[in-house]
Image 1 (cartoon, one colour):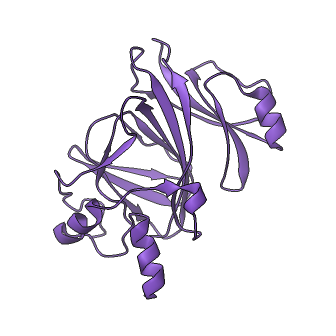
Image 2 (tube, rainbow, N blue to C red):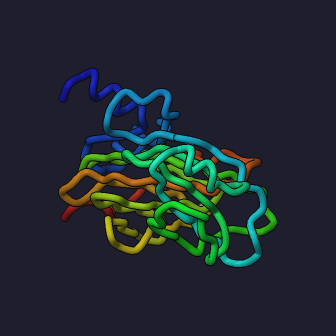
Length: 222
């Protein structure tokens, strides 16, 4: 592998090495994602925005994803606590709200939830674009709020102490509560393209890299 390319993957907290306790220890010290302004490759994970949401309703809340032809149109439909982002070649309106929320215009793509959120916590929503080739891994990390994925293409396996979950295009969404450590691996045979939400406690970091837990390799091919 090209040395310069390897260095960039490592700077993104990604690994192309087969999973093992040693490789998990090496990547655990690296960040999971970087700001979009630092993007230098087509593959990796990039933080697009961290948008204040505030307290959510005591009712079950969902992540609503709508697309628009222009950013101006998305901005016009945006409600307080929502965010407009550009990711995966589209313009998106991202809204955290109860199940019956609908944007005034745009095309509804998905609503994901319910999210395991508390009405007593002040939240922010970190939205990220993730593009992984099969075999790429994240560092081992935790989140201070629920994480969810919208997968456009490909497949990703997430291992936690409770086992593993697989997210793939057209399948059920992956939703993980705050707290448990996790390790992500791009699986399958095609590039994983996804938008990621971390609805995190505003008083805490969205993501914390940890070495306190070692994955068992449940996401590796037999």
